[in-house]
Structures are given as structure tokens and as C-alpha cells.
Image 1: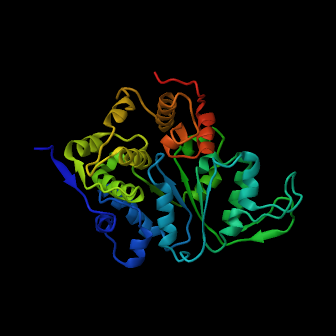
Image 2: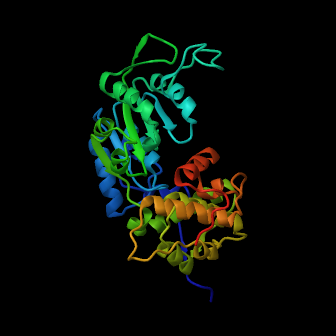
Image 3: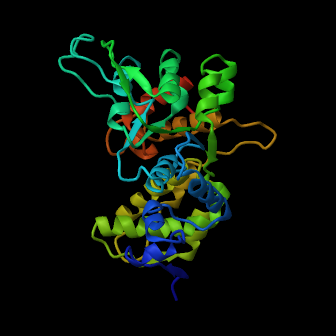
Length: 343
């Protein structure tokens, strides 16, 4: 007899395993949020509570936990749902261009400004603007952001005409803003304006009971995309996936399952479990570990596995599930070079 395995539903029937909601609009808002754990339910309760208001929301959590999905759910549950949901990653945009991305510019405002450009705030008028990695916003731009939040007005680069906007701001960070404030790298008044309603997104290790649902969801998603029929997951494989700590959280799990589906020739999922064991990050309980430590170790380990290659389908950026520009920015922030090795 073969080893025990677990059958899972196809992509159409999987929706019934997602979060139970009270009405159709909420089901649509929580589309893509998979799980039943207490930790996740507490987070979604906060989403339901704050969404109908226009208050600013600060979403905190480790990299890869799904903060953008939570921000999208807040918008979709709000009265602004029929207006724009605009996203901007503060790390992905070069510092010199970030002000223009946020507030726009006039023709001739700087070299290369050949036409007027509308910024993200104007594009989000009447809707929601999601600023990811808000802790990386340059200090010189923070007073301008604070002014928009307090007064609803700003000027495009190169213009003296005041623009007025009605935008709900949702921000996210995987860093410690309190530490950045103490280091004079983040304004305390901006922090208090952003932190009207904080929401913590739990790491995957705190919602391990959701892993089988997530695994089944991603297997259904990628097998359909690759036109494969994968019907079973070996019980031993599922146990290994559930017991792994997933330092990269849902993003790491998603990328791992995509790789597994690619490697699967038949109807039973084949997972490269040795990759998890070789990439495992182990710390002594006696040593305090910060979020930056975890991020630095995970990036260094990935660079080691790719031999310093960042771009391409097998590069570090793809393995980490982030853009190349985002990875470069995080490497600079954490003091990582391509030659870094893990201990």
C-alpha cells in the first residue's frame, strides 16, 4: 500500500474552506484570505470594525504575512469600495522620485519632467491609498505626508497651486517604528497620525492550523495555472509543511508550493522538503532575535543558495517573492552585499 495522503478540493470548491462571512460583499472583500485560526479571525474582526470609518490604519507584521491583502480588504469593506485603491511601496521607488510619485509634478519641475504628472494622492482621490514599508519614507518627505493627512492638501513639485484631496490612508510596516522614532528617523507626530487604528497581522508560525488550507489553496491555484491534475498530498509531506516555521511566512509558502507543483509529474504532490531543511534558520532561545535579524538571515541564506544571483527566475528576488528593486533596497538597509555568507 502507498503512504497515506490527503485529498483536497479543486479551485472551485475551495472557496467553501475560506473565511466564513456574513454577506456577499464581505466574501468578496476577504477573497484570497484563507484560514480559520483564532489569530487570523481576530485580525479580520479588526478589519470589519475599522473599514466603515475613514480613519487611518497602520498594519504591522513580518514580511510575507499578507499586509497588502489586509489593506485591500479594508478598502473593499469600506464606503470607498467603488473608488480607487492605489498602492505604493516606499522602498521600491528611488528616494529622488518618491516625492513626485506621491504628489506629482509640473512640466519642467526637474530634469526629465517633460509633462505634468498626477501623483498617487490625486489618483486616490475619493478612495484609499496604501503605503507599504512606511518606515522607509525619507525624513524630508514626512512633513508633507503629515500635512496631507491633517489638512487634505499639498502642492505638486514645481507648482504653487494647492491641491485638495479626500483620501483614506492605510500604511504598513514590517519594522519597529518606535525604534526609528528614537533614532530620529521617523517623526513621532506622523506616527501618531498613522497609528490611529493599529492592526497586527500574525506570522504563519502563529497560525499553523491554517497551513493545510493554504497548501491546498496554492496547489489548486498553480495546478490549474499549469494545467496539471494534482489530487493528493502525502500526509507526511503535509506534516512537514505544517511543522516548518516559515520565516518568510505566506509568501515563502506560496513560492514553495509553486515550485512543488512544477516538480510534480503525476497526481500526488511532490515537494522538495530537503530545501526547507537546508534553508532552516535556527536560533538559540537564549539570544534575543529581532525582526531585522530574521530578515537579514533569510536574505543572506537565499543569496547563498543562489550564489549571489539576484535577477532571473531562479534568482534571490524571485525566491523571496519580491521585486529586484525591493531586494536591493532591503540589502542596503540591512548592510548586506552579494558576498555575505550565513554563519
